[in-house]
Image 1 (spheres, rainbow, N blue to C red):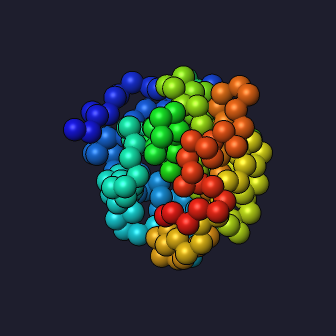
Image 2 (cartoon, helix red, strand yellow; image 1 turned 45 degrees about the horizontal axis):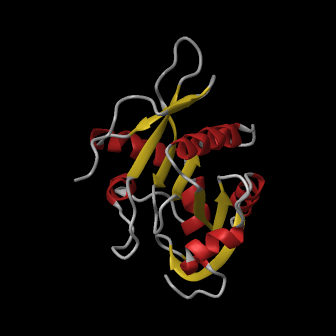
Image 3 (tube, helix red, strand yellow; image 1 turned 180 degrees about the horizontal axis):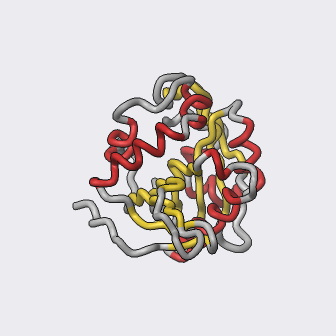
Length: 208
């Protein structure tokens, strides 16, 4: 059975936000966040968020052949100042033990457009990464759409390296090439170590 979402904060970014698991009754708030921040959907799929985008995101799981341990959908809530509003500022969707023990997958990391360009994304991601490492993550992987220059630059600055490219991926309305990128979270580890652990992410692999 899926784990029951915790109402307790899992990590925080001082003077910005705290992260906790989203509950199903908060799907309308997530949809409102998507509608108010169309940049990601326009860039990746050439369209705004669909009316049921949040519900689909809340329920979507990886294909059955890609095993994982647990799925966290984390809301990033405003915690600024004494009168923090609790407004949803962003979203992080992560999977533990994705295809191999110790490999975590960042399926989505999104901050509201008003927070872009101020270094807040890097601070928030650093807190997310520290939390993942504390939960046992030894590697973090993600897919970034080739040509989404803003995201490509961001993830390169966070230390991610390209492992392979996956052409012909329908990301939700547009067929894109995904760059599978990986970051070691344990000292002394290399991309070569990761590829021995997860051969499906080798540059020569054709596995979906």
